[in-house]
Image (cartoon, rainbow, N blue to C red; front, side, top):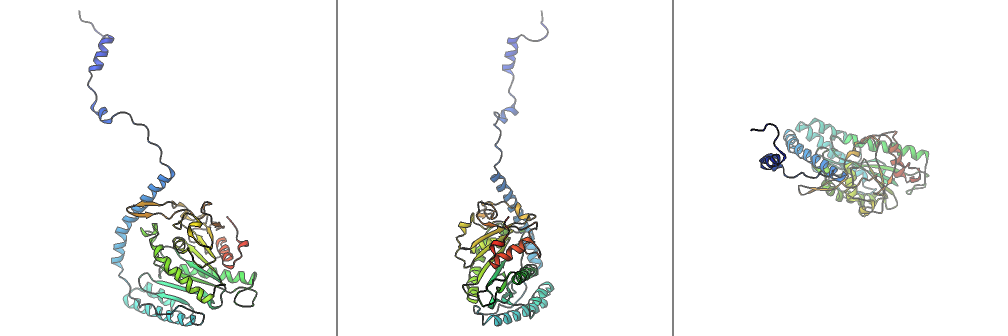
Length: 372
């Protein structure tokens, strides 16, 4: 008699034992424990890796095309000048204006109207350059004010994408600072070191003394350009002391990638204050790592996109990428001052909180600097 329905329990067990295993399950193996969530540092490093990869792709595509589209612009060699002294400043200004005029003529003959116009503006009789080099991206060191009699001097160091073509924006910030210094001088005069007047004599120097990296480039993620720029900046400060003397108060005001340059040049630099604004990092992890006797200041505007830059070091493709600690973080140890609601390009904007505080740092009125 044949039984219908379910097999007995023993039969079911035997059937279960003889059922062939699923090959797909065998390939999967035993269940794996859940992977731990990535740490904040790991997420930063992954994000930085993606940024570098994007920059590498951009550099591989954009840079060769740009170079092919725009050949190097001809320009004369810089004027051969000895280190300046108060007595030779006018000779240096005259020689560099003549060099800029010749560079403008050569650029115009080459068909580059933009560079020709920039060079022509720099050749104006009112402009005072300690250095001018129209070759490549171009170099320029310009004085605003009476440097021969100055006892308060600000040296501005720019960030990425500053060339002779874009120099006007950089100079506008230097001019705004000089104007504000003059207003504060007349309002709150103090004793100057070069004379008997009750107010100081100020000068602002726009120091485009290095080849800045492009914002969209691999170089902006490393300290390479800053390493190259540090020796000329150190040399310039030594020459500046030869003009203004050891008693003059010299402040170094550094913006964006320029803060990396100042960080690399800081060791032993003969300046009184170093201000870091809109900084992606200096390449150092603390004020003590800068190895300088200068007072270190830092600020970041509330709307500055630089806040999104991860402050890490990472070894990628044999290169150290990342610029280190955030200068406005408490751990870095700088004197953090208020910069208002401005964005990345607003630190020298007329009427801004940051410009007022930078001017007070230059004047040595540190008790008047508003802290963040």
